[in-house]
Length: 128
Image (cartoon, rainbow, N blue to C red; front, side, top):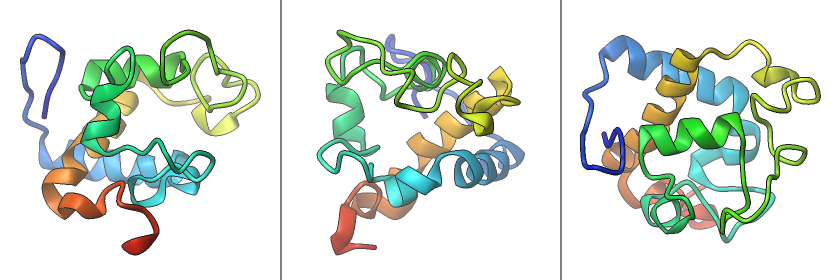
């Protein structure tokens, strides 16, 4: 999966894949089941949506940065009080104990899903 915007990639271990799925299901799937965004169906976790965000979120580093301190899709303002994040862990308890390695595996899970379930990931109601 893509690690950073320069094009470097990383291969996830089977353990990281399992851990990322478990952590995603526990911390993120309530709003992002199947790669959709229940609160804003126009912006999903599909590769196109992640790549068009500012800053781009289609890499491990981009997603980890977002999970630490989320910004609006255009990058103009912080949305940490609205979206669970490390920055707002006091109001979003599920984020409280996540480590950088946890965020790395969650990001890996998000970026791996389109390779496994193809267009279903982020495809919305027609698939789920």
